[in-house]
Image 1 (cartoon, helix red, strand yellow):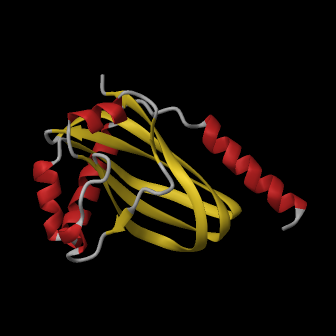
Image 2: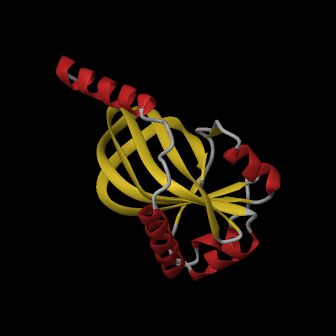
Length: 177
C-alpha cells in the first residue's frame, strides 16, 4: 500500500471519529427509515415478528462502508419505540484486516427489552466485533435469536467489498425534540 493510500485511509477513519455526533431531527430521515422497514419486510416477511415483539428498534437506511487494509463505515438513522420515532442515531465502524472495496447497506437493530433499548439510547452503545449481523433473505429471520438483548439484520444495497476484518460498531443517540 502506498503512503498516499495509507494517509487517505487514515484521514477517512479519523473523519469518521470526528463526525460521530448524532444528527439533528430530520423528517425526511424518518420517511427513509419507513421505506427501509418496508424493504426489509418485503425481503423477509417473517421479520414482522421482530417488529411486533421488539421493545424498540433502530433503522439505518444507508450505511456506507469502505476500506483498503483499514476501513470504516458510517450512517445515520432513526430510533423507534412502539412504532413511533423517538430520536436519531449515528453508526460508526472501524475495521482492520484484509479488505478492499466499498459497499452500501441498510441495517436494523432490534432491542429485545427496555434494558437493551435504554443502553442504546443512553449514549455510547457499542456492538462488539463478535456481534452477528444476519443478512436478510427470504426466511433468514426464522431461526434468529437475540444476543445480549439485540438482534441485527443487514441488507446489501450496492457495491462490492472483499473482507476478512475485525471491527465493532459504535452508536450515538439524539432524542427527537
